Length: 139
Image 1 (cartoon, rainbow, N blue to C red):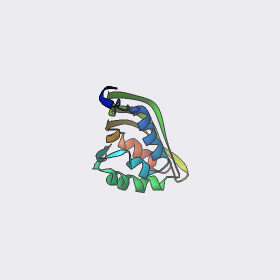
Image 2: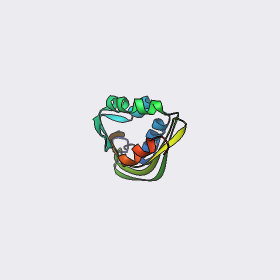
Image 3: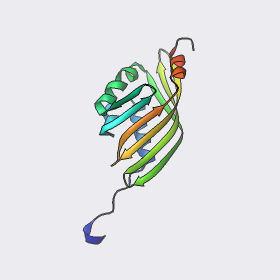
Image 4: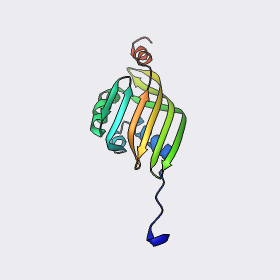
């Protein structure tokens, strides 16, 4: 090493997003929100964005609290590393929520932008009609 400088640590972006999803599945919003930048945007398309870890926690707490279990199945995930701690991760998932004695499932495409080893943008795309239909009793 020249001048005593160490090489920058490279963050495994794929593993970072999988760890984040693991915290959501475990309903550990404290750990999940610790992985977000202070100005992180969570855009739950088509419901609209919120900004900041506390807004993310406030938005997710009521719904996740109703769930007995959560299971997000990642079918495909790709990561583009732009720098040691920066890049983009995209995935295709089936988000499953156990509510009222049954599983509610919604296909999701997720986008995560990572800056300095933290998630600065989390955007999930899903069909709202599919989600609402799956939430209705008897579906």
